[in-house]
Amino acid sequence: MDKQLLNEDIERYLENHGCGEATLLGICNNTDCDIDKDKLAILASGFDSGIGGTYTDGTCGAITATVLAFGLTNNDAGKVQEMSRILFESFKEKFSSIQCGTLSDSGENKTRCGEYCKFAADIYVDLNE
Image 1 (cartoon, rainbow, N blue to C red):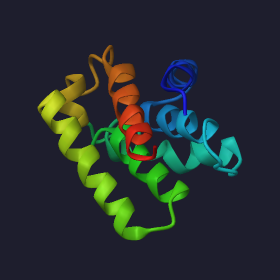
Image 2: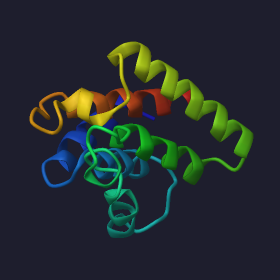
Image 3: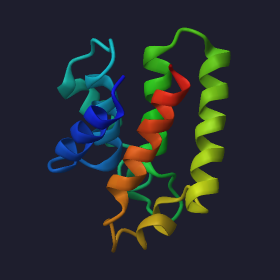
C-alpha cells in the first residue's frame, strides 16, 4: 500500500468527515475492504471527536478507526489485538496522549488531527506489509 496515496485520501476525506471517518475511509479505499463507503462512514462516525464527541474522556478517533480497520482486513483476532497494542503504544509515545481532548484542546484546536489520522494509517500500513 502506498502511504502517500493513503495520506492524500485521508486529507481529501477530512474535508467533509471527522477524523475516525477519514481514517477508516482512507484505509479501506486502499485495501480489499469491500464495504460501501457510506456504511464505513457511519461505522466510524461514533469515533469522531473522541468516542461520541466526549473529547476529554474519549480516545482519538484516528486510533479507534484504525483498530476497526485492523479487524475488517485481518482474520486473526490475536494479530488484530497485537497490532492494536502496537498502534496504541506508538501513538502514545509520539503524541504523549491518546485522548482526543488532550490532543485537540477539547476540540478547540483540530489543526493537528490530519497528522494523527495519517500517523495511525501509516502504522496500519507498516503492520500489514
